[in-house]
Image (cartoon, rainbow, N blue to C red; front, side, top):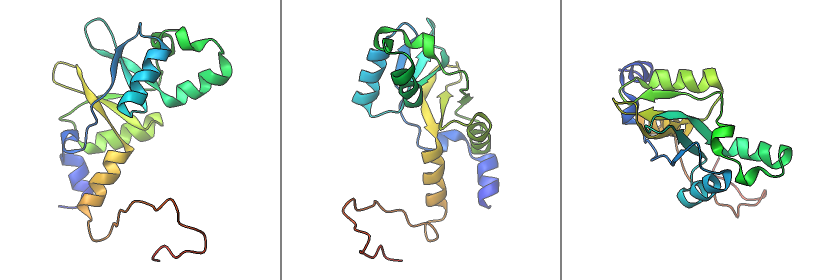
Length: 156
């Protein structure tokens, strides 16, 4: 089976789903930032009173708020839920994930269980890791040495 077939048939649950930071829409931007920092996440899943996802609040939105709304820190994240967001069931194929990432122009999708409750987020990085695992000899993944100078060879 090739990568295309894998993407069409393998469920999203085969990817590395990051546990998501879940907050109600009534949480403040300040609280969302604290939770994103504490959990090393780039977004917060915003849920309603029943725990169902309404959308997400992202670092990208935060950057816009910093310049556009000087008093944003104490506003609620529910006011800033991103319009373009996507969710998917963990049993859906990886191909659907890739399609949603491209269609919505987003980096992460909220993964939900059979009841629609959020399990976490999955995105571009998980797809790249999956491809690297699929082609271990063709894809060499290594951490960059932050101290590499322009004059140093990188192994190419």
